[in-house]
Length: 77
Image (tube, rainbow, N blue to C red; front, side, top):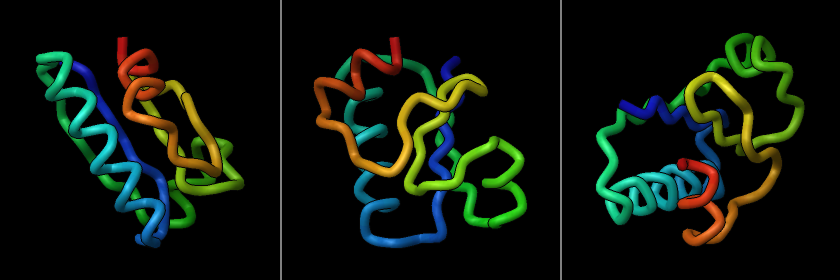
């Protein structure tokens, strides 16, 4: 099961990244869990200074932007 985490304070881009990640995971037929992390202390613990950020299985994959659904699919594999 893929563990997908969205790091961000709840801005519009954070919501869009969560939606994109969920749509990409569903399109790939992955089993996944999706967690939104909004605490600044928790976000900082990943070493992230720019949000939104996409974390897959504990590895930060994207910072400060929302990738396309096609790019997100590649990041989830």
